[in-house]
Amino acid sequence: MLPAVLMTVSLVERALLVKLFYENKGNASAAAREFYHRKSLKFRPMSTNDNRAMIKRFEESEKLGVKPGRGRKHITPVLVDSQSQTSEFGSSSTLTELFEKYSET
Image (cartoon, rainbow, N blue to C red; front, side, top):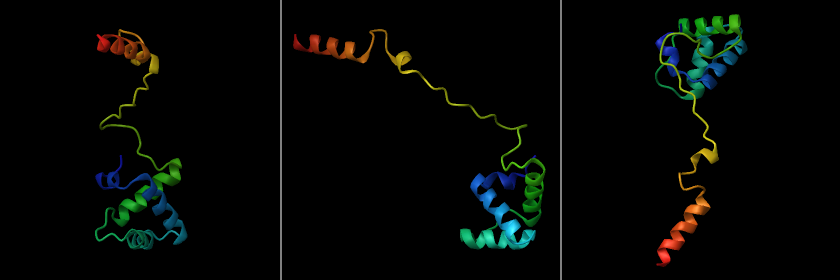
């Protein structure tokens, strides 16, 4: 399970941290320092140990995402077909015709 601190770092930022780790020849503290410098951060969202743990998980699984497990489950959005959105009166053109018919009288 990822530490709570890692949850605040986005997937793109994790990829940047991994890239900087390998550019700095495996030096986690130099990678973190460069990351904070590039992002102009005044606080550090991750410690060096958290950074090393993330790199280790990346090397084992080759994925940067959060591992499934406990926590809030994400709800996938349901795509609604346009035909199922029509009301009991039928299509929108039928509704327009009914509106025009009753607005004339």
